[in-house]
Image 1 (cartoon, rainbow, N blue to C red):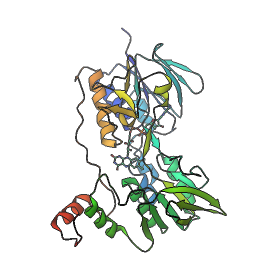
Image 2 (image 1 turned 45 degrees about the vertical axis):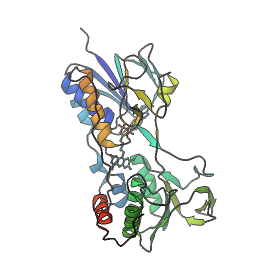
Image 3 (image 1 turned 120 degrees about the horizontal axis):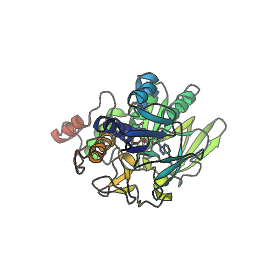
Image 4 (image 1 turned 60 degrees about the vertical axis):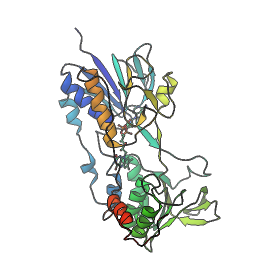
Length: 343
Ligand SMILES: Cc1cc2nc3c(=O)[nH]c(=O)nc-3n(C[C@H](O)[C@H](O)[C@H](O)COP(=O)(O)OP(=O)(O)OC[C@H]3O[C@@H](n4cnc5c(N)ncnc54)[C@H](O)[C@@H]3O)c2cc1C
């Protein structure tokens, strides 16, 4: 009997850990990995540390090119998948090559969201941070800059702003909500966090909608709904993520804000599965590294008959800023030791 042929699109944690577990569970299966990035598997979690100069780029890699050979995986790193055809059970690469599969795993993740309601959001000098290549561009720009603005005061926005500030840049964070981390902290806790982060060269403009980014000389001017005009050398947009579901959508798979899957990660297409940031499971997407890894491994177990369904763990995202611990802030707020009035 011919070995079962798995194709995986996406070499992030969902795809990579699915491949690794499939190899362990089904030693003689065929695994082919595609990713548009030409790099072996690396961690995105430490990209702010790379920008902060706390870690060298080579330390981000969690695998090497040789590992793929060792795992007996055919890799097409640096190859974009242009379309998938569930009826014919094949995918087509951007160079027009056709690859057949028995089972297809879509692990295409997400991209950084650039809100197109902001005029000038794609101007030169406006960056996002999702990949090593994004980080390299930001680091290059930092060399000739004194001031940066981060649009978005969520977990990643704060980590990134701290990284930029740590490298000597003056940083403003512009946040849509009237407080930081509205998903993670209540009003009192957010006020404590703000107090801990604020410095003369690191400030927060809350409760503002960025309306326009204008190129001006070598820099940019940001306009908000409160008539602010903020000058900066560059901007990093940290306004959340947008799931990468185009491939699935064009091939007719059911999607909403993610690719809809059941508790076996089955999509609406036969023998097509979706895992990680791109998958919409029980009406939600996770956007977390640990969830992507867990889903990749769970799918490999399901495909090899080792379990029947996936039940997600409880995940608790943390803020990775030196000296700041969200649980301690919550405790401080509960103790009332912060001297802040509770609402
Ligand atoms: C800067 C940063 C910091 C983060 N910090 C944390 C953290 O502290 N904690 C946490 O839990 N999570 C964190 N995350 C989120 C975490 O990294 C993601 O949840 C995780 O990477 C999702 O894994 P994934 O495999 O689903 O998708 P991804 O890691 O996005 O991988 C998807 C891959 O698919 C490829 N791809 C997409 N479309 C195609 C195509 N058509 N053809 C070929 N390849 C394609 C992409 O190139 C990409 O490599 C962070 C993310 C970033 C960017």
